[in-house]
Length: 309
Image (cartoon, rainbow, N blue to C red):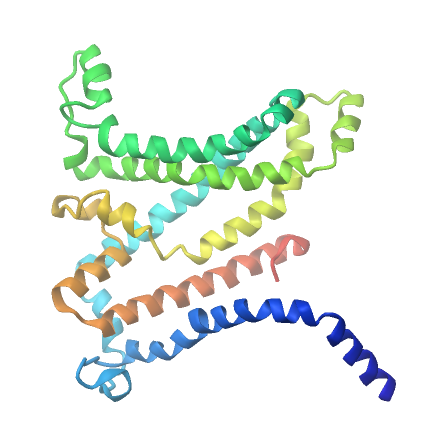
């Protein structure tokens, strides 16, 4: 036993600098991730500013029923889930495609302009998203109405004021804004694949498509699963800026742009009910957690080695 204790003490002393380096991160995690858990009780209380969190009266599950008592419940659930499912599917496909295209750039050129190639998707995303929002589809000055619609002899379309166009606008904006970062992750994974696999495939007569199908995509599978699981965990959340600020909180567009987050925010502006907002956040977290567990379980049943846990 004495030898074991001495060895353990020796290991602690040896790694003491690393433990000290962990302290700021642990303190931050405790303050940011664990202390707020005490606020979960707000979801079950009728919060009153005068009484504070601890003294406010309990009201059971009344805060949870507020999301489902109005006709908006179906709309916000449909939009939140529907958009996120489309974002995950199309975003993953687009990011993988761009990463593979980047990996096919001739090796010498890639080595000479490595940083430029890496930054292209990210820079393009933010430049184009701004252009789309303010210029591309403008009714009077937009490129689509002025150049394309006019050339085809069609009347200008009020893209931004009709709800039926917004599912496409929001999806396009989201993809342009986010695919760059994801493609960099996939690209970094492809760069790390052992080049001997491709060399052997070339010697066996495999073309580019077969190399992608039998080498690149299987090697990307763990990263795809990990990023998908992380995205599924937030499937009941939405990009607040995208769904509230881009449509400029226009009432005519609520059927296509209203999500759980924007609905709760508008509820807070109108009723200032913190208890109901906390209940909505609680539901989002629980459902997201259950979805991650369920998705990971399904992955483990199909291919155990690819599961996160």
